[in-house]
Image 1 (spheres, rainbow, N blue to C red):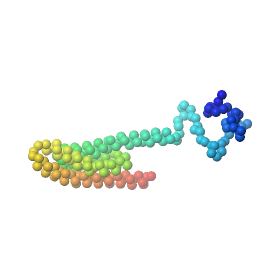
Image 2: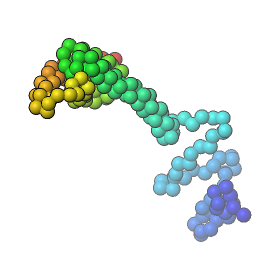
Image 3: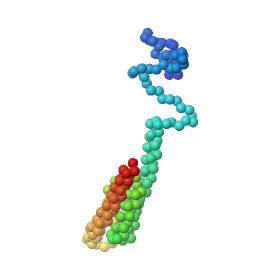
Length: 186
C-alpha cells in the first residue's frame, strides 16, 4: 500500500532517524520541511480555474503577441514593395512616380510595422527601391541592342539613388519619432 506520491503510508518510516513521510500533526496541518529538504509543489487547480502567472501562460502570451506583430509585418512588407513597384512601372524605372511611390511606401511601411520592425524597413527600403526601379525599367525596355540596354540600365540605377535615399530617410525619421513617443509615454 502507498500514499499519493508512491511512498509508504504515513507512519511507516523506513529509516532509523524518523519517518520520511510524516503525516499531519494533531491540528491537521501538514509538516513543514526545513533547509534543503524543502521543495515547492505546484498547487492543483480545478478544471474551470485558469492558470495564473505560470511559465506556460507567459509563453502563450508571448506567442499571441508575436502573432500580432507578424500580421502587420507582412502588410508593411507588401506596402514597402508594392508602392515603389507601381511607381516604377508607371514611370518606366525612374522619375517622379518612382520617387513618390518609394517615399509613400517607406512611410506607410514604417507606420504599419512593429517598433523593432522599423529597423528592417529603414535598412530594406533602399535595396527594395533599386530592385523595383530595375523591374520597371526591364518591363518598359524589353527590346533593343545590348549596349544601349546596359547604358540605359546604368542610368536607371543612378536615377534610383535619390528615391532610395528619400525612402530610407523617411523610414528613419518615422522610427526615431516612434522611439521618442514610446520613451515619453512609458
